[in-house]
Image 1 (cartoon, rainbow, N blue to C red):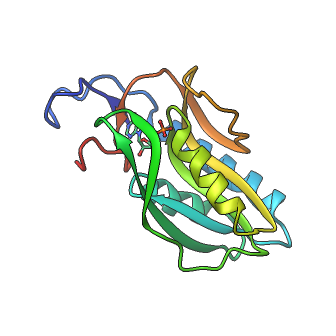
Image 2: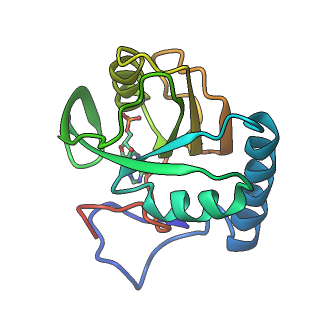
Length: 171
Ligand code: IMP
């Protein structure tokens, strides 16, 4: 995973590595063990937020030693290419009925936190038995709302990062 100037094309010039691959995989294995212990006897429904979270979700799901179910939502937030406005539109909704389920939202990265705040509110209204969030990356110092993130992979500096499913302009 690396950061790079916003206007630059994909390689070369990706910038510096923010989270090295071995650290990423080790942390995901740890998160998997934590989630396995926390959800013993009540397997979670993993809700992946497309598109960015799909690579993380597939690694995380394999690191959880429980019969997890998976579903996906796709959202788009209005704003510039790199900043959300917090006004979120659901492009693809869940297929599963989450009422009475133990829902674990799997998010790639939290920037302002506005997308996640919206998702939390939206999913909470559907009556899940529990609702928690697992975010791979959280940018330090940018969140405007308290997000109550149960699982966090890494806190990173507030820069735009790409790779491991995280995109810039769909690339
Ligand atoms: P927020 O609503 O400001 O927290 O933005 C969250 C969403 O914006 C994430 O789910 C990503 O899709 C996207 N995003 C925010 N920061 C980055 C980044 O550094 N790289 C790639 N996508 C990002």
